[in-house]
Image (cartoon, rainbow, N blue to C red; front, side, top):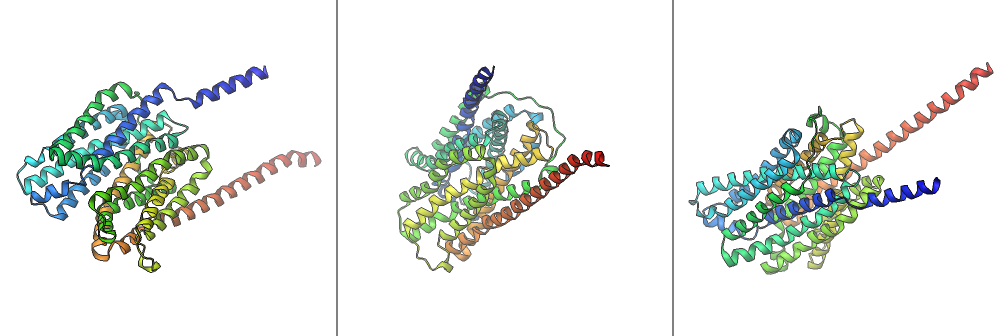
Amino acid sequence: MPENTDITLESNANESRRLTKTQVLTMISAASLNFSSMLCYSILGPFFPQEAMKKGVSDTVIGIIFGCFAMCNFLSSLILGKYIVQIGAKFMFVAGLAFSGVATILFGLLDRAPDGTIFIVMCILVRCVDAVGFGASITASFSILAKTFPNNIATAMGGLEIFTGLGLVLGPPLGGILYQTFGYEVPFIAIGCLILLMVPLNIYVLPQYDSLPGKESFWALIKLPKILLMAFTIFSLSACLGFLDPTMSLFVIDTFHLKVGYVGLVFLGLALSYSISSPLLGLISDKLPALRKWLVIVGSLGTAVCFFMLGPAPVFHIESKLWLFIFVLVLDGFCIGLSGIPVYPEMLSAAYEKGFEEGLSTLGLISGLFSAMWSTGSFVGPTLGGFLNEKLGFKWASACQGLAPLLAFVLSFIFYTWEAHKNKKRSSSLESNSTAQEREPLLQEES
């Protein structure tokens, strides 16, 4: 019998290591979403500002057109995350893809709109529709992944970040080539059609999860200290990445006198290091949950140091060198993954520890909050970063941006130290109570 039991346990362990058909199909679906959404997001940078200027749009309004996406994404993520059970995770995912695909195609047709106010209003409206679709799909994707991979969500999300980085890397050069070859419309129409082709695929592939609406609310969720800490960590990382969009290329060109074609290669350092390291960090986060807090703490500190060294900050009196700049970017990509990958499972564990139901309703709340905080950082980062860069220059602006992850590091260190002290105190109290109960019958017998 013991031998048979060992064989059974071993076979169960081997089966648990293998991905089921549902898990494989879900990963394919989520990977296609991550890749296409980042591809769609990143193609605008190389040529849309120039086209908008031809339509009489100022730099400030161009920033608003970019920023409205993040704000609409913030609002839609919170609302859709709350009502994901009523809407249905699969329907939300597929409908979001359809909205995003149509909006992307429509954005490619806006060069035919009249110059001035009409063009601006149409751009904002279409970007808002795209943001709602993107927010719906991403929120549903997080929830479906957490439901499909209950024991290794960080590993699954870490693996998917490869496709996120791939979309960010390929977007600018692909968009630039299509724009130069075929004009303004083709990049958006091509990617929009690609997204629409994914709709019937995901109708067939994605699993259907039915669940009852939960009693919990966003207010109950964000009152938890660890949830607030993780939300601010995500905001700080997103803001740091967003800061680089309007500022880094100008600094590289002015300081190192690189041609515009080589600037994209500099961006590769951050994207590749993040994408390559994320699967390993996700695996570590799942296999060693006790290390998650250290990943968050060290990653936040490392991100802060990287932004102080990007310039580097004038207080260090270090001359800017291209090799140093690229090295810091590579290290920054690793540090952002270090603190960003464990955040979602940390939020899940915090909610479950406080009695939240282990179902789709809770997953929707956490996914919505995660997406909303990332969107907030994506809006604040480039907006504030552009202002600081204009007033202070890139070296001081990047150092100021590094204050956000530095604050996340300080708060994380304080919170986890307090949590460890509280748990130690609780365990010692339980141990003393247990010892007293064990001694009590002996004392009664003696009396």
